[in-house]
Image 1 (spheres, one colour):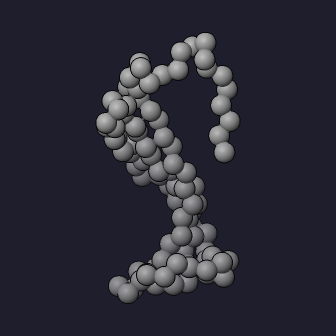
Image 2 (cartoon, rainbow, N blue to C red; image 1 turned 90 degrees about the horizontal axis):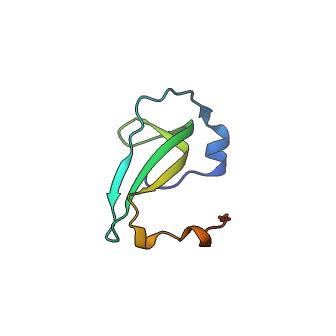
Image 3 (spheres, rainbow, N blue to C red; image 1 turned 180 degrees about the vertical axis):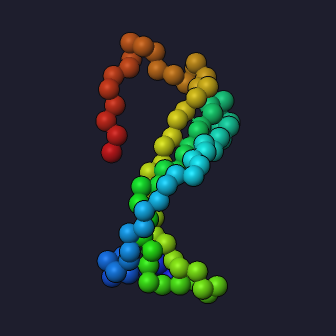
Length: 89
């Protein structure tokens, strides 16, 4: 489907239960030496009353991205005395 769906499309959509089959981490090696691990976690699925050109139904999903930085080089880390709780927007 080439056009985004509307609020009306979402309000008419049917909630579909699901089971997790597999949730793998994607791994990215950054030029600064850090390794990022990223995983998309599905939180809900709705089947719209719209169809793709091949006849398959269109689904809308809600998800969360989980990001972990591993193998961070020591020179990029804050010194212990400079650490304080961070607030993220």
